[in-house]
Amino acid sequence: MSRARDRWLTAGVEALAEEGANGVRIDRLAARLRLSKGSFHHHFGGADDFKRVLLDHVEGLLTDALQAVVAAPVPAVGGRETLARLTSLLTDADGGLYRPELEVALRAWALTDPDAARAQSNIDQSRLEVLQEIWRPLASDAEQVRIAALLPYLISVGASVIMPPVGSEDLRRVYELILPLVPDDALAPGDRSVDG
Image: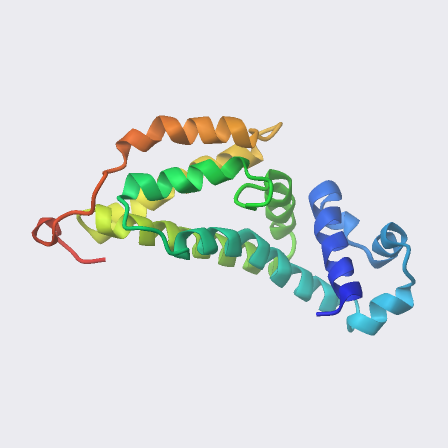
């Protein structure tokens, strides 16, 4: 991807987080970047193409960080340690695990735009799948895995949509309160009623 194209996408993400979907207009982004609309048209096939590319970009921003943290090779640890590691990254500005302004803006946009709704659905599904992977060795059956994955996710979504959004430090402290509920170790193979 070219540097100018990256700048357009970064500006689109910033405008979405700061102003909502109404801020993602080509003229406003051009002014923000001090670039011409010609530069925009050199990199994108119009507003609809930009919206599609921007939503794909946002989807990546809101899912890749979580997937990378979970996929990173670490010594074998229990479920509590895995979730504690995720919790510690909430306050990491570079982690990208908690971006409430972007969450709120995308969820609001998804209420009125089918493409944004599709992106939001993909994000929710991807995140829940990652959380289910963490819980799979810790739970006795698939339903317990599903419900256990919902708990931290619903807390995060709720924290981002209340006004004002819960800060990352407070969200980290909430998660630390519930970490003792997480089993330390995977269940023994005979303890499972249904494999994940």
